[in-house]
Image 1 (tube, rainbow, N blue to C red):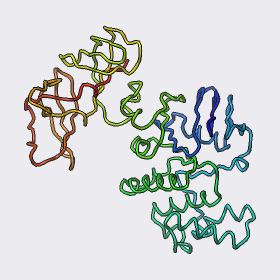
Image 2: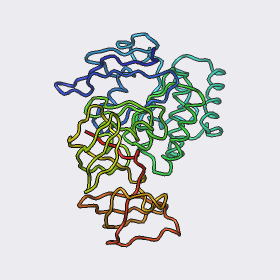
Image 3: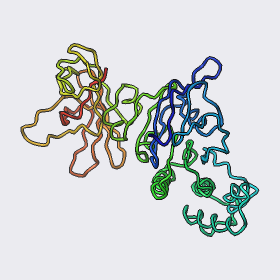
Length: 355
């Protein structure tokens, strides 16, 4: 039995469905992300679990118990919002203690629990500071400590890093995952940032237009997307129009950019002659062979090149199709000028044919 379970949940606002037929199970202790573009229904899903809005149809269960119509304060769920919601007139100690005070805990218990929470989030000694004296990352830690101190069974995080700069986001996503792993709390994380989801999650549900399109591990979502939307939304991708030349169960070959290349089949039942999109990731393409007898998959010319520090990104014209190629920026690899002839190599299992 799943720890958290959505059973046929639909939510409509007027005539517009925000979430449609959601059937998702989340394991106890799992870090589960809802990933998708703005308006896909992920925050609505989170708010239904928190009890802030009610499903139009379907039910929500925690540990087998139907909580669909329970008020938020009866659900034992903590939530951290995008804007932190720190009280500016309270210091850090009082912000974190707020939920304990509302529960009627005694002063000694509050001091002990708040002290432990401050230590847990790395803010010992910050008790007397106010919001104006905190950095964005410190505010995020205070917001998380305020939730963790009440010891909820489930932690909900709604776009918690979107207000931070890139460097701080990188630091915080590893820190949040470390905290979640150390306490083992079931966590549902909402984000539109695929890098956050891939880095932090045990599993990811990709959503679009109110529906879950695919659920899987970060590796499965990235390497085995089931649709063109997911292939484009998750990471950088080359999606080239092609025709399925051969299909043998889960593998085959695709005619693309003037050549025939091997490919895994993303969907069962694809038949020879079908129009498909051929997916190959930029980092999977090499401009040099592994061995002297390796044949190139495609040939082309350099259209342009972009310097990106650790990487060089080339745009290659192959029979009228443009591919992006990312190669390590190493001294022994010569920079290729526009117009240079190139050969493109990748492992046969790296290509994917999508209906």
